[in-house]
Image (cartoon, rainbow, N blue to C red; front, side, top):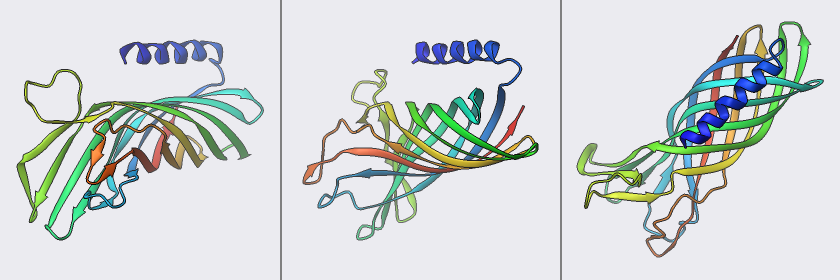
Amino acid sequence: MKKIFFMVAVMIAAMSASFAQDFTFGARVGMNVANITGDWKDTQLGDVHSKMGLKAGFAACFPLFDNIYLEPGLYFSAKGSRTEYSKLNTKTYCNLNYIEIPLNGVYKYEVNSNFAVRGHFGPYFAFGVFGKTKTEVDGKVDKDSKVKNFDDGHNKANEPHRDYSAFDFGLDFGAGIEFSVCYLGVQYDLGLTDFNRNRYYGLKQCKFHNGVFSVDFGINF
């Protein structure tokens, strides 16, 4: 993972040198509405709902052709889901926190010198860094229910954890506006990776995928 981050940093630095007069760099912060989709019909998982989380990071935008740009980024992105078991009066929160690297193609239409509308599409690569699952019973957290979600190879002997893959890959779809140095955008991350390696839940095998709708605000420099 460190090698990938290093490669991304080198790529951005190299492109920045090539487009020193034209590229823009921006800080972004926003809110995720995240969920985990899967094929768990007829299982014992309960009713799965979305949960909110933080998204924050940086993006760089490099011109390629008229109105066409390349925009790599580096983000912290909180994903996961909330599951309710109404018959048992319990709620389970699955928190999945990633470092995410999108690589988007951007089409930007400048209405005037201070206002532009834009759309983007491209792949993202994400790496789970930490996250736990916890359960509330009658509104109180069950301390024994807290388990790690990612097996990072450093778990203590007999320490409970869910066998979730830390790697996630998917596609970004989004649109936004730029007004002077301000940015406001919305996007959806469609996870394509089945990150569930603990195959059995309830009565059948389940595949888990991340799905995230987000709203971002930013400042361009």
